[in-house]
Length: 141
Image 1 (cartoon, rainbow, N blue to C red):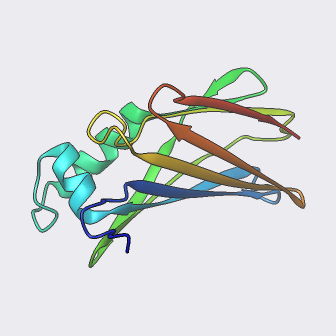
Image 2 (image 1 turned 180 degrees about the horizontal axis):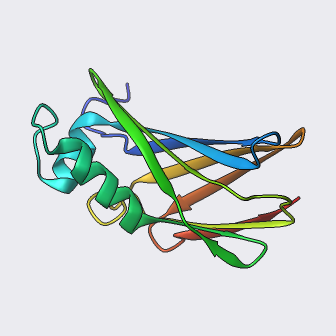
């Protein structure tokens, strides 16, 4: 009989949705509350938690569209029990042919961390995987 009780699973899931009307690519990231609070070394119930999450995401998530670096705007976060939801976006996105992301969220804290990013763009879906040693990935549309 295999036992999984000692095997921690470290992952984040990000969903990126393109809004053609506003030319905005919106991101929603789901993180484990304990894992992100361990990484940023702050209790999720304190007033400074959201500011630290914003700084952490800005330092660990980079976006390039058609070879150009894009600025990410943090739009909020929400702690919901064991999950932290983080919201950010980039605007002025008229067309995407290539999308490159560097996602090192929690990779420095948890060696077995796996980050997934699902992108929805004009009816097309792409999935990117990130792990230690493979922090950058690129897809084409």
